[in-house]
Image 1 (cartoon, rainbow, N blue to C red):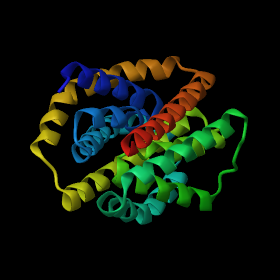
Image 2 (cartoon, one colour):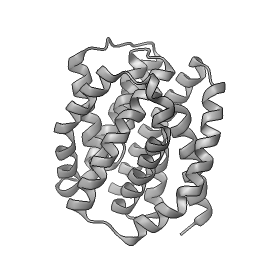
Image 3 (cartoon, rainbow, N blue to C red):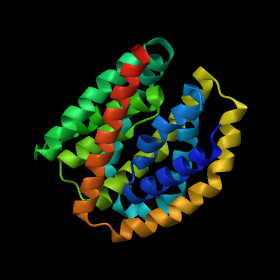
Length: 241
């Protein structure tokens, strides 16, 4: 395995997660899948994302929209079992292809100034969608990111609410993954080895967040979404060839 690539992935993803609230799974999962089999890649992602959320929760709790967070979590209750069923029984290539096309299409709409009004019903739906993606492909970020971008939410609210959501959703998803899909020594050895990198990423990410204005934050959002969508699309197409 390429140790240097592993170090770069974890460090960059940790910085991104700390500075934006949503970057770890979006950046890390695609590359971890190049180094590990799917179960290990997803579980390493879940473990390290959970560590980051725990480390930051005291710092960002004042920025959490607790009403929205509650609806996200209630919606995710329905999404989590759907996601693990998809992981165990459904063709993940078709799922990734569909998700990639949705992400790319919606991101283009956001760039073209499409906006959506936030309401309680949509909060529940987004929570459910994010929950299902967490246990299926280990990537809950895109639904939240698209939703918050479409509602013009401030960066503090985005980071605080998403990290609060991840703190709960990653813990539950990791338990579900371990119980129903099993785990391995590889997951825990590499998760432990990555902890010093995560700590460095936490420090650097906090510095970046303080210097990043709303427009730069939005640009990061669009780049991450397009990267995720295009990557999933290419990966799905190549796997079928």
